[in-house]
Image 1 (cartoon, rainbow, N blue to C red):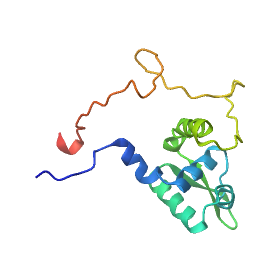
Image 2: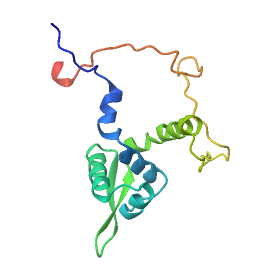
Image 3: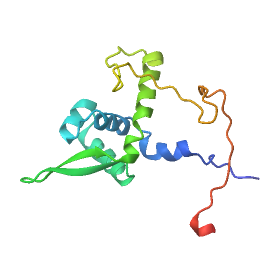
Length: 149
């Protein structure tokens, strides 16, 4: 009898450290230019101990880094790394979905540097057509690591 095991998945791997409300809300704050712990805590409403834990895990995962902004006393702020910056379109996609389906009062309009309201549209790199998700299939492959070569 075969053992049941979860499907290997990049989504599951990402959710291991991003898949919790306080982590995503902290990333939102960093993306909006909020860097101090107290301000992140106030804007998210996260309990201080849980937020400290999430920020530590996100730092260990390479999503954010701490940088000193004051010498005496030493104070550190949180900033997105390149990996964290790549989460910005994901946050915008979540916001767009929330505007459409979660029915919150719309409190923010996301504006691109060109001045127009932003709307994330995923397109195929090959043909340029919009990706809906219904037009995708998964192709599984085994990744080779340096140890397996």
